[in-house]
Length: 364
Image (cartoon, rainbow, N blue to C red; front, side, top):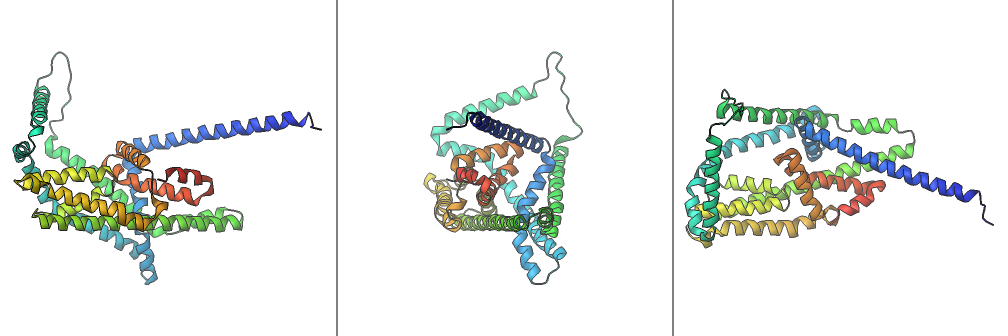
């Protein structure tokens, strides 16, 4: 016989368990929203920290390799950072003049664009008219009692200096945090192991942490290497096309390849513009974007999937949504970090049994 007293108890227990799961779900959602809101409000602090963590995972293998050759960890942490900073400074110094030159060519190329693309002449004229109207409205004196606060003491140079100062502050914060992360090594893992009471839990935590760190480092190194090869191939293609400033276009292709889908799409538009500015014939002008698209197609559809395998592939819809979200949160740096952050989330989810369903959801 069925115990009449036990059935309500089981039903009550199931109801309480369901309510507990629901409360946990909503509490976790509110906690996640609070973290995102804090990340948005304190982006000047959070963005350099996130960038430092990603760079730490990228540079950690180099530090470990130097340590095997008996290089002190304090020095081994400085050398990769110095190399990266040196490359960045060198690229900025080498690319500033070519970028300024091409920026000056852009207004001169508008008539040539209209001549090549007659179908766009109507929209171009409308756009020019809208810009002229906007300029007239912007230059018009305020009417009525409208109060406009203008900082005339800054000027263009002051505005640029303020923006440059903010960028330099963020880079300095990133470098400092990155150095101490590389210097600390496995300190946080050791502290976690010391806290856990059971030996089995300690061993599992070490294995999961090492696998996650290894997978993320391999992924970031592979993506960076492939993007560098795309940059080199693009620079060679522009050289064969007779387009000058190949270092500028190689660097552009390298950076854009960190942004899936939208980056290559923007790259095709940029190289189409470069071709139209550099060639008189429309067919020759289509050669630079065509070669760039071919390079991206070979890399994105053949080489990278073979190297990373299926476990690193992500749902394209979620990738685009991630790009839009992180661009809204942190601008261009957020767009560059969107794909690595999503890939890191998938790697962590695949290694943790409690999050394996999320990892499966993120797959293509």
